[in-house]
Length: 158
Image (tube, rainbow, N blue to C red):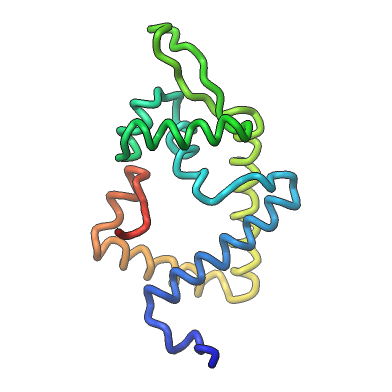
């Protein structure tokens, strides 16, 4: 038996809509030469994008152990998205930097998100899209999630 979307509660509807949009974004990124990207890469990239960080700094910002941050960094390095360089202030410390490929991926992702938003606005109406976004933002705020978004510490529930 197939479940009709209208029978889902708001949290599942929002979650599944986000997954569907993310799947489409991933498909479009792959078509542009970014097939190696994973959704979870953004968890690290968003922190390094603002400024180079040490693994210790990354772990603190992400709210994880240094071991967990090191494991994520090693994977991103292996896939050519991050590189380590000595800190000019302390050569013993290595700072994480996005590679050109990673910066290109960020730009491609931003453009594709804008395109997807424009397509949805054309199909469903900009006003409906704005209302949906406002409602979901209010729900996020209602349950205290806006601080996590501002701190870039959004994670799935436990």
